[in-house]
Length: 363
Ligand code: C2O
Figure 1 (cartoon, rainbow, N blue to C red):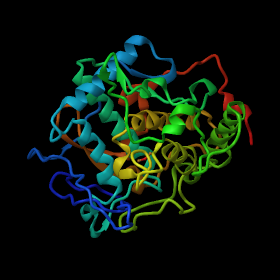
Figure 2: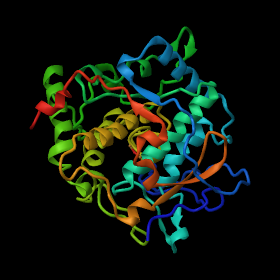
Figure 3: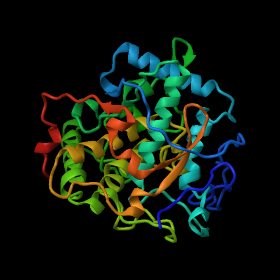
Figure 4: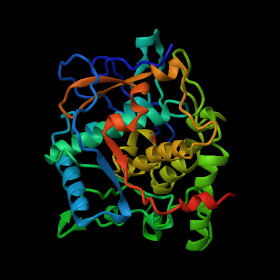
């Protein structure tokens, strides 16, 4: 039986899994979405003709950047209990990852849902960003609005994008800034895609070369088949899987987690914001990192190597989640409906003339 998220507004509990106080005691968080008394509807594919083209964050136009900044500000300006607010969007990650929901809808009310460390990782985050992008577009009245992506697989894109760095812009708070980050890393800028908690004493050039090898490792060497890339099976009745489980997918356990740890502030009790599930969504960089993680799925498929295919098991295809869409309707979405980007009406701007630099970086 597939994992089936419950009606998130009626069945949700305080989250506590993996959240600690500085003294080590478990701490709980309120992560449940606002209840507007709506019933869950089936998802309908977007009907528009235009395709939203996600753009590399280090290389956007002034207009793209300003729209993005304005949209995040508009999100921050909403009251917290609005389903589109900055806080409500951040809480989605907490609720699905720190134990806000149980598997009650598939017959296991005692077992939490955890969408990490398994084959739910890629599809869940794809849907999460799909709605997040459309909500931002709606807030600034731009039906073509597209998210940037942190293109850490190309040397020019490896520094944390400049837009996230300043605390204020023209005397006003920068909507993309977050105080809970590792200040030294943000200053030095080049991300370490293999960060394990310890800083390496290497030059920027060497770090860039290492990063390319890491991308190659995650997309080719360690991701040679469906389960190695997506992560192991996770179905109704399974307990949440830990991140040390060997079946965590190659990108998820590799570059994806390294970036979370590299950005998060290791002086905070849970490496907030990016270093813990409950808090990661409070850093705008989270969504831009995940937009590139989502793009890794696309690039992996585009390699067209044997074994580079999505799962076909019905327990993967029919796993489902519930989100508020851009019209504040509650909709249920299935893994099987997020495989085709063409149907979701977004894609990624690629530099088609260039061979991806990591392709030549076999470790
Ligand atoms: Cu849901 Cu990058 O974590």
